[in-house]
Length: 362
Image 1 (cartoon, helix red, strand yellow):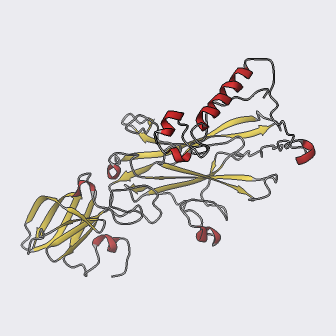
Image 2 (cartoon, helix red, strand yellow; image 1 turned 120 degrees about the vertical axis):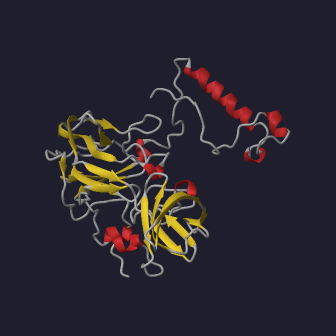
Image 3 (cartoon, helix red, strand yellow; image 1 turned 90 degrees about the horizontal axis):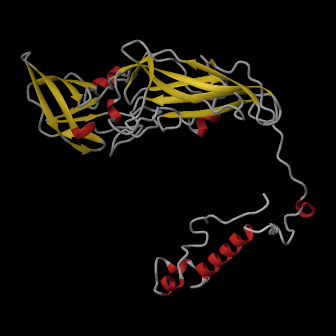
């Protein structure tokens, strides 16, 4: 660059630039201007002088004192990097390598050799289901994969899933996580394989988090691999692949009844990473949407009773007081999106039907 101009400044680096009158009147946080009432005027005068200089043929020396000269710091040049050739880029992995980074794993788990679960789900419950994939991709010098969520339409074609604002659901949003692992991890100039990992949790982007539409979905990955060249722009070619479809289904609610009271929660998964509900936990209990459920009671005489209930939040759950009929022996509970849970009077205290279904010991 032959010349440099000031176009902005870092917030709080020099404080708010108050004109003299505002500083003297005790304007907005004047104490930040530690150089006094003329600080802003001085900085603006110097910026104007420099701007005028840019209109001439004169070049202001960038380093008038020579403190950044090669004699002081030595020569410096950008490192030369040749992207690894990865002819297998675009190959979906069925089994992860020995080490595969995932932000869903703790550092201790990564150190212990825990790897992401790449087993393919046929059904993915809302909120609680997470789809994880890994593949051989390109060197990050040329590859920044685009991972797109697609939905099967009635005509059999696949269409991009979009948010309420019309944006495609990709790794550019919080919906899909993306991570890269080179093998070997170091040194960077070694011949490396490049493994990419992505995960999607079945939650809507902003609205209707617990009501992601049911249907058939898949992930579509677009990337680039290097084909040669040691200087930028490198020679590349695209790759892409799609996963097998999976079906999004309703979530399982946890239902607990104590005496005449009932509490219902929408539990987040062990490796969840998305916000589920206000007053809830992304890896724990969450109140159901609108604290509203429809419950169908089965009575001891075999009759049924259906009612809509409005509750309140207690301990990250939606709780309903004095609602359990004295002769109820079973209940089916659904939230406003159709997510469903059950209760039966034979269940031991402290355990729910969902616990039993998940294989927890009674």
